[in-house]
Length: 389
Ligand SMILES: Cc1cc2nc3c(=O)[nH]c(=O)nc-3n(C[C@H](O)[C@H](O)[C@H](O)COP(=O)(O)O)c2cc1C
Image 1 (cartoon, protein in one colour):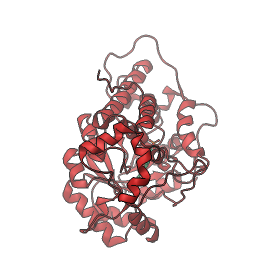
Image 2: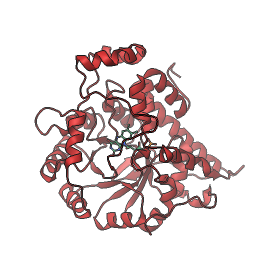
Image 3: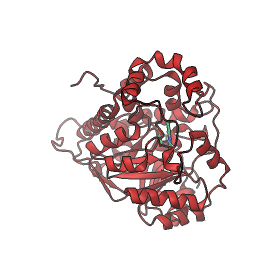
Image 4: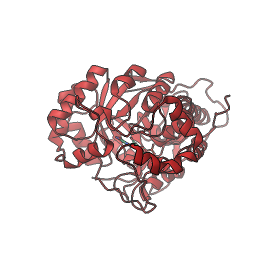
């Protein structure tokens, strides 16, 4: 066990808080408005329980799954996030960790590393796009991802450009020029470990989005965000069009309603992720685990249903699979691991989740995640939310 090892995701988060400059840490905490949704994403898992057996348990337990044609050694994938200033190896470290643990990574179009480097580090890389820049640019970026070896496309459309947080948002500079570095310096010097990582890598945090470069220089994060805000919003026909252009495994991320899930089926998607963007979109949206059972019942026979939001333990994964998810995606959990220990930290997080899944299966007396059903979970009255029926 290495010195940097941590035993829970909560511990990784504590390390991240100590290691990262406060503004970087708070960009990962994120959330919106009152933080009702970001809190419910965690609370809801705590409301679900288990009723473990005491004997006749299974000595071997299988947690392999497949999503969008990808074999996964555990039902946990990496959800796309931009991790600009967390660690100099950024998404490449995350991709390596996921590959080492046998799972897939979704790479954000706002990521700090180019798709070519990430796909080279993990052959199970999926590229995530927002609807930004219009059809020609979308196709060009998608084709770049295809050439780089992306094995799936994720489109995220649950973003309403709200940003106000009652606890305040960090001031993120447009680019890391001298002026920004001087302003940022007092924070950074209080975080020598983080500073040293970047110093050893010989660079300052790159606040650009190389996957939106369109053959030229990578735009700044804010330049890219500006383009996105000015792009006309996608219709369901646009989603169906993009899926057709891609032609391969395609996920719509951010579905919370049964009617939207049905429209996603009509648009021909391979998979949906039941998700509220980690509580960063419309505050007041319920936790995805509450919306999952109704959505899985409605469309689980037609598309692959994944969940993301609030996963911090292996038992959370088991609860989600029991309520109808094929697998989950994690966001903050791996960001904390990356901040705490780079690639090793992300591997540590995946190991924690694998161990927790195994323990829950053991206690439930099951030999495979495929045997999980809602009957394995104690669900309090009024837990679920049926949206859009
Ligand atoms: C800092 C941060 C950045 C994110 N960036 C993106 C993104 O670029 N694209 C996207 O589809 N989702 C993004 N998300 C949402 C995650 O993919 C995922 O839905 C969410 O983090 C899941 O919740 P969890 O953090 O509780 O696991 C981001 C989330 C966070 C916390």
